[in-house]
Each structure stands twice: as structure tokens, then as C-alpha cells.
Image (cartoon, rainbow, N blue to C red):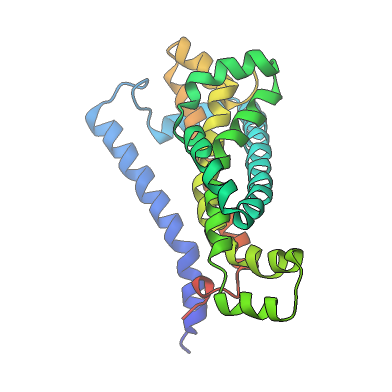
Length: 261
């Protein structure tokens, strides 16, 4: 009995990422072993896993802290972007006035002003939350505005013909229209949020999170510990991307991009 096309497609969606990760790790391992690369320059995955096995609880706790920093900033940026985007869609003047500011935030090297934010907000979580949200905000705003503007003209005319309120138009038409572009941006922003959180943790004087471990390892030239934090970041990013993909398929099952041939 042959499998249905839908079942085969689902299996491929699960198997393909696993194959890609296994091949990538195998190439990484072979390159380090064959080229005899120094551990601090590039540590083999087998050595990284061995080092993680020595203190799994410490790295797990640090990963949870980094995840919290990234997730809070990520969600805050998304919420602010939706609120700001709804205002900018209704006012072309406000959009033109806000766009240069968003571009300045987007292109400014956040590494250069992390220390200023830490001095302003103090040590601990606040600098990580604020910096992560700030850096992720512009991309989400651009995606929200573009998506809300892409609402079907015929549907807009239909809502206008029944004298729908702005809230109804926003909730029932513009917001659903913006979701595909928001999910595309979320795939990029989840990695960005983790990177920003990692870098802030190395400068916020709290000695918590993967960034703090990575900074100590870099200062002491401990390659295994440094690459262990990088490995944990890769795992967090992969899990985050997978969750976003699952959420997208659940919420956008009606969209053409999620339909299975």
C-alpha cells in the first residue's frame, strides 16, 4: 500500500532538517580532525558535547536565562511593532516621519552602545530586555506596515461598504494580512534576539546567561567553554525557529504558503 502524498510530505519536513544538521555536524567534525585545528579557533562537536556533559546543569540554567532575555525582548518588540504599525498605516505622514528613526536604530551597531544602556538601566535583566527589544523593533515595524498595507483591496471595499469600524478592519483584515510577513521577520529576529541577549549578558555585570560564560571563557582562552556556549546558542536558535514554524502552520493554515500540494 503506497503512502499518501500528504504523509510523505510530512515525513520529509521532519527528516530534512535532521539530515541537514547531521551533515553539517559531520563536516564540522571532519574539518577539525583532518585539519588539526586548534581548539580555541574551532572545537570539534564531539569535544563540545563532552565538555557540556561535565556540567550540563550550569549550561542548561544559563540557556534558560538567555532564552528569557531573548523571548521577552522579542515579544515586546512584536507588540510595540503591531501598535505602532497600526498607527503608521493610518497616517502616511507619521510613517514618513518615523521611518528614518527606525532605519537609524536598525543600522546603528548595538555593540557600541550596550555599555551605555547598562550604565543607564543598571546591571541585570533590564539592559538585556531593552536592548533586545530595541534591536528587533525596526524589522517588525516594517513587516507590520507592509503586511497591513497588503490587505486585499476588494476586502477593504467590502468592509467600507458595511461601515466597519477601524478596529474591525484592523482585527479582521489588516492584522491577518500582516501575519505572513511578520512570521518571515520572526524567523530572522529570533536569531537576532538571541545574539543581542548573548552580547548584553557579557556586559551587564550580572554574571548570568550564556553570554557571561562566553565572556569569561574568551578572557581565559578556554576554547571548550566558549564553543560550548556557541553550541547552546545554535540549539536555542534551532528550537526557536522550529517553534515559530509550527506556530505559523497552525495560525496560517488558511494561507497559500501553508497548503500542501
